[in-house]
Image (cartoon, rainbow, N blue to C red; front, top):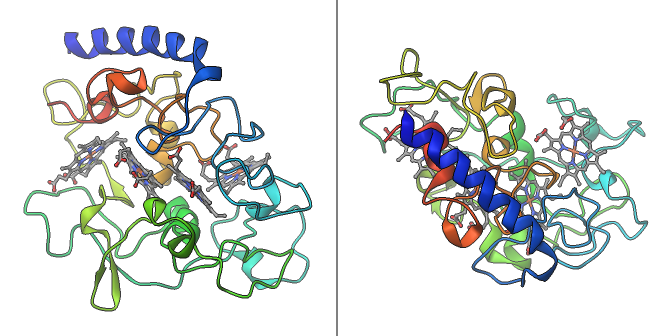
Length: 251
Ligand code: HEC
Ligand code: HEC
Ligand code: HEC
Ligand code: HEC
């Protein structure tokens, strides 16, 4: 356990350095664009009104509205079961999950299809839904991420008619029972923390690892210079080697 604590100390020091240099951080494909200062930052990936990183999706200037809306306005998509006043269409794709045929060792319970917060991310990132499919506009359906910028499409490959999640870290998956804590394969989510101090448990969704567990969509609890990650994963991003992975996996 000792090296894990040391790692965390280093992460904090590196994170502090990264914050000081954030203004001069160049944009490039190698490192992420996240600023860690909130979604209203023009350079934040999900600021769809600035046009600096992603496209301008809502030209009314309302940042939140592409994803959340305060009233339903009689549109079915806004009653998505996940709540959160969700305002964006979700994907109707089916997926080949990581566990189906791929892993001989996965023991955590995984949902049959992506659910919870991951379903919300996939509504843009799987590349099948137009990004401007939210209450404000009638989308013509052409503005998908696959057409716009293939590098941020997750998952890219297909398995027959299914989108293939076997090349993506397992999502909608629980920590394996009895595997968390000292001397086990996983850190204890109730006490292990991300670089900015939240517990892993507070970023699980219904007890499961989702896209939003590793990434902060609002770019507030993320580390500058990463892909909206909650802990940097390399020295180049201002962290320690594989610091994100080692937050959960004891290896
Ligand atoms: C409304 C559409 C939409 C939704 C919903 C959405 N994203 Fe994105 N995301 C985008 C766009 C557009 C970009 C920028 C793509 C580009 O740079 O071409 C992006 C970029 C990203 C990036 C790359 C940032 C970087 O600096 O490299 C990550 C990571 C990401 N999103 C994760 C998520 C996660 C996790 C969720 C769900 C919790 C999510 N997104 C939900 C549209 C969306
Ligand atoms: C790209 C889509 C996207 C945009 C834009 C967005 N959100 Fe979210 N929001 C999400 C997703 C996905 C979740 C659930 C995952 C999570 O909480 O990390 C969420 C969760 C939330 C929550 C509940 C959990 C929490 O973090 O407190 C609140 C409140 C919220 N968003 C407010 C906002 C506000 C206010 C804005 C605009 C300033 C905004 N969001 C912009 C996608 C988005
Ligand atoms: C938020 C905690 C968390 C983080 C961060 C995390 N993982 Fe995982 N990982 C899990 C969980 C939970 C599983 C499912 C474990 C199981 O059921 O055996 C998993 C599964 C895996 C598997 C599949 C194992 C198998 O038996 O098939 C691999 C490989 C893996 N993770 C590698 C990584 C790598 C590499 C990173 C860093 C990029 C990473 N993980 C980051 C929690 C995490
Ligand atoms: C276990 C942690 C973890 C989970 C869960 C996770 N990611 Fe990532 N993601 C990463 C890491 C680490 C990177 C940076 C390394 C890389 O580029 O592959 C990344 C990179 C990205 C990027 C930047 C472009 C790219 O492909 O490199 C996007 C977009 C993204 N993730 C979206 C998602 C979406 C959508 C989900 C859910 C379906 C998701 N992530 C689930 C850890 C995770």
